Amino acid sequence: MAFNDKFFDKVEKKSGVGKNTILDLAKKLQQNDLKDEGTLREVIQTLSKMTGKDVSKDQEDKIISAVVNDKVPKDMDKMF
Image (tube, rainbow, N blue to C red; front, side):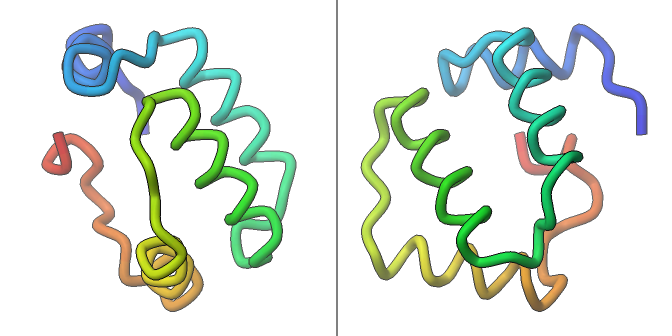
């Protein structure tokens, strides 16, 4: 899936996280197993710090469950 600058602009506007930061995180994700709970927790915590949004343990558990059980929307553009 190719993302254009319009997509990154939407994400940055909503989150304050720039394109290069997103691409760096995406590269890290590609090099790790997204079904691994430890990797997912690290990514969630990294995103939490980058965006300045607190993620509770309960929210973190729900996100991990959704990712591990393939319940994440496939169309990323609709999420933003």
